[in-house]
Amino acid sequence: MNSSMPDLFFDKKYETIPLKKLRKIEIELLKKQLDYIIKNSSFYKKKYRSEGLTKRIKFQDVFLQLPLTSKKELLEDQAEHSPFGSNLSVNKSAISRVHRTSGTSGTPLFIALTKKDVQTTVNTGGRCFWSSGLRQEDLVVHCLNYCLWTGGYTDHQSLEVTGAGVIPYGTGNSSALIETILKLKANAIHCTPSYLIKLEVLLREEFKMSPIELGLKKGFFGGELGMQNSGYRKEIEKKWGIKAMNANYGLSDALSMFGAECQKRTGLHFHGNGVLLAELIDPTTKENLAIEKGCIGELVLTNLEKEAQPLIRYRTHDIIRIIDHNPCSCGRTGFRFEIIGRSDDMIVVKGVNVFPSAIAEIISEFPEFSYPEFQIRLNAPPPVNELNILIECKAELLANAETLIDKIVHKMKNKLYIYPKIQLVEEGSLPRTEGKTKRVIKLY
Ligand SMILES: [Zn+2]
Image 1 (spheres, protein in one colour):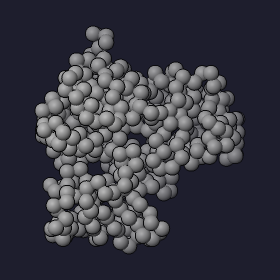
Image 2 (tube, helix red, strand yellow):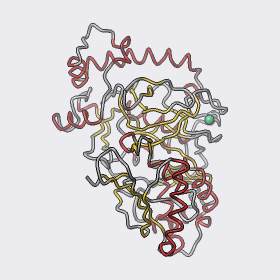
Image 3 (cartoon, protein in one colour):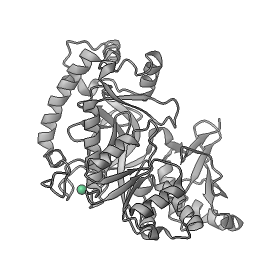
Image 4 (cartoon, rainbow, N blue to C red):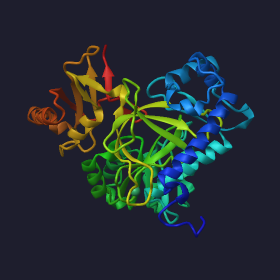
């Protein structure tokens, strides 16, 4: 690593750029990118033509009127133009890396990256890990799936670009992982929050050790919402003796990582300055919303300099809340936000919008549940009148379930204005896909 690199920032120029200056740069990049797309992407050419938009229109002038892009369209297009779809805007020979989305919500999407796309992705990931506190002196064990997923090899490179040492562990074989951490004296881990639960059980049962004895000092987490929950985070920090950071938010289809906290822990910072344009829309009316403190909406993304499969006004289906649009006291100018949930997970119960993340927050306020695994089951199509929630708990709690259930229902009634029907089930009994529990199950 370059020793002249300032300690506070990984990419100071873009991380602290005044917003006015950034907007000017973004407009220039957008013009170039739209010209590039009209020239090279059959997918967008066709899409815009079918919307009655012609080449003569200066696309940058009508940017906000350009139709949104959905994952469904990309999937259909990839099925028709296998494997990379007609949005592949370069020759196949220019593809430097191929990933695939995890496909937890259906058919996976193939992601192609050119050499330049890889650089941009890795650099933005570097901003994220650096702002969450990863440094050259750290030895971090990387425990995300390397099989096709961007979280694997690409995030590995983002860890490495900070100057830190990286152990490419991947997933599975957790006992050997514990031995590796102990032998190599790794001081940091990058994984999903729920993986810690598994490690904790193993440590206690097989190694007769408490989590703190593993010697980890820094935890970088992503892939799940757990770290946004302050009670859960505090418990992790106490139990493991680590500083637990929400360090990895992104979407493999748009950019692997672009959201991470800084040391002030004032929410996820948007780290996509100069490479990703963020918009906020109302998920129902699709109307544009201001990125301003307190606003809630669906995040929509535009790649400003992607070559292989550039996305324009791409719907993420992630509902975010803007914590603040003003620069953070750390000096970074990207807006700060938190994830509220998936727009497709939003359930309207008797006119009240409910997100599984809000339900998770309430359950985890009870000390009986450390990291709640739960499932919402919907018996009939909307309108939803009643929510059925299954929550996993330790076997010994099942005997006294009723008192506990009453307390949870009472809290949900007061905070979320819902009266759910709750059932406690034994730990590990809810089905999981790639380590994750699907939060909302439609039984109809
Ligand atoms: Zn900050």
